[in-house]
Amino acid sequence: MRTTKSRARGAVVLGVSADSAARHDKFIDKFGLPFTLIADEDKSICETYGVWGNKSFMGRTFLGINRRTFLIDADGVIRKIWPKVKVAVHAAEVLDALDEL
Image 1 (cartoon, helix red, strand yellow):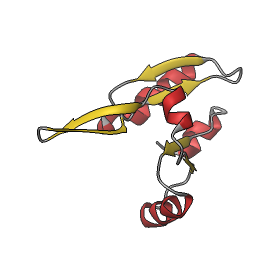
Image 2 (cartoon, helix red, strand yellow):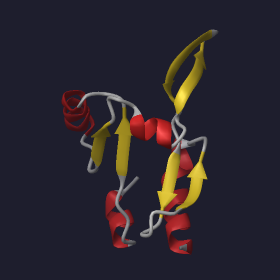
Image 3 (cartoon, one colour):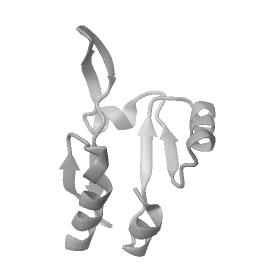
């Protein structure tokens, strides 16, 4: 998402994964991410938000993060959840939802 547009709407963009902070730093550098990634190595945040669980890929089932986007307001209330992210339109959908708050 274009963080300049989200910041203009008073939003903060955060990413969370079970990877280490060192891996996050490399990922941020490689892709030039303009937002913070939180290292949730014990998976406590992922479990709280219900995104850690079974995944399937090529007939194999394994534990991992099921990617979702959560729009959380200034009071900490989840206002919208995107359970499936369609990259081509996702940023626009999130920005539209921010405008509706």
